[in-house]
Image 1 (spheres, rainbow, N blue to C red):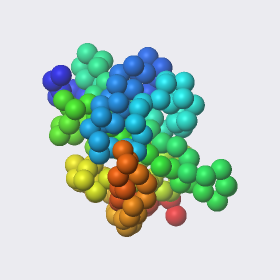
Image 2: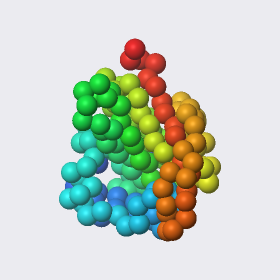
Image 3: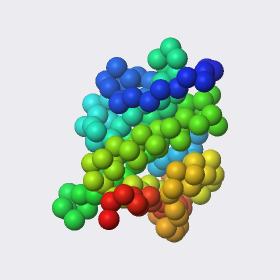
Image 4: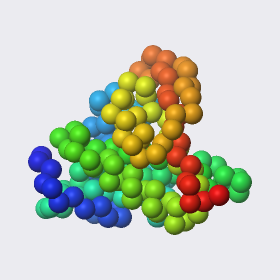
Length: 168
C-alpha cells in the first residue's frame, strides 16, 4: 500500500468497518498496541466508540490508512470532559504523518465538544506512538507498572494525556 500525498480525514462510517477492523487486528498482532487479543465485531466497536470523535484517514482512492476513536472514561458527570482514545495506522502507511492528522482531527472535535482531556495508555515499547503523541501536545503522566497481563506476561503502560489549552 502506498500513501499518496493526498490524505484526507473524514468521520468514520460503517462503510469503513472492514478496513478499520483489519488495521486494528494488525495492531493487535504486532503485540505492542493493546491488551486486546482480537478485534471486536463492527457492532461492538460501533457501540463502544463516541460517534462524534472517530475518524479515518483515507488515501486518494478511498483506502483506510488509519483510524482514531474515543470512549468516555466514566459515566460520572464530573468526567464528562475526559475521553480515552486509540489511534491505529496500517502497517504500510506508518511513518508518513497519518497518525498526526488523525490526532489533529480528534483534538478539533473534542475541543469543539468541550472535552478538556484526551488520555491513553501506551506500551513503553511503542516509541513511535509516544513520539507522535508528544508532537500533538500529549504529555507523560507516569508509568502504570505491571498494570495487566498480556499473553501471560505482566506489562506496563505509559499514561499520556493532552489537556486542552482552549478549555479552562
